[in-house]
Image 1: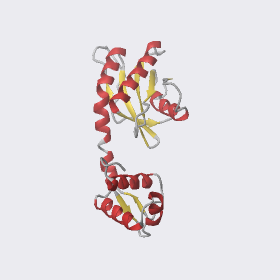
Image 2: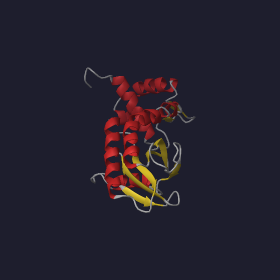
Image 3: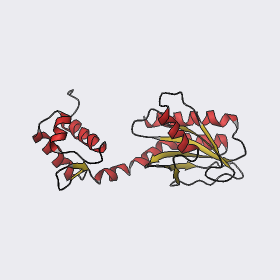
Image 4: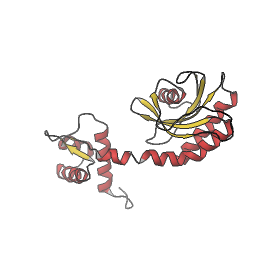
Length: 213
């Protein structure tokens, strides 16, 4: 541990990460072994985290992630949305289609930011908060493709009529952003997605990823 970092904070964050990776919680002894520190240190870490509702302990003494983590997590979407808006606006105006940033939310794809073009006579209405299964629609399928081929060159996914009759979608995954799994895409009323749209979506996804790093 270098002089510029806090050993206690580092250990507390490691506790949270360990608990986040398990569904059944961990005991003080298990945490002590995984952290490589004695049980007294673990007790102090848990007591502090429990005061902030970041962990909870059940009747058997197993520690689990607490509801306080959810309150922190709610602040993530606004920060991500703010960082993505310039690239989404540029994409929507350039393509003349509704642009969106979609993040993984459990088994669903959740639209957290949407920008509609200002100059078109008509476009697809798409609202922030709209969710759909990951295996339907370009936004979710782009995320699944990145999961399956994490080392592949950035690409895009095209779909037609999967979420709305007559609507086409194009999306590219966000890559290289720690803790964020999502995609950037557009949805339009068209029989065929113009060829340039796919590459433009890839560029926008790269811009959003750069803004989030």
